[in-house]
Length: 126
Image (cartoon, rainbow, N blue to C red; front, side, top):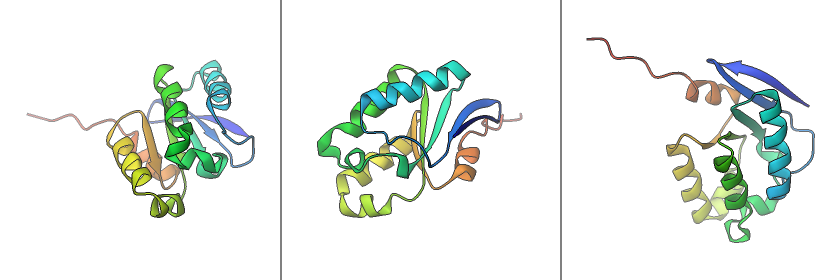
């Protein structure tokens, strides 16, 4: 189940934990197409919706999936605890850290953290 929500004027497709696993580019494209049809700029997807191969960087699934989101200019927020994966892989830990520094793909604890990230920057007053 997915619902379109507006968070700080940003349309976000909030996906539930039930639903098809994201196993690769094709699944990502289906999700992106659905989000774009609904007018979403971001997709928030629970971490458990990703097949375990996504978290194994050597499989290249994460890179392929993230690249599809970049190509279509749709943000991806992976929500939930992925510590079992990052503890097992220093490379994944670095990947997550780098993603979280950007504006395209984030690995966040929950929807509240997504809401904080989507807040517009406070304009400086002079």
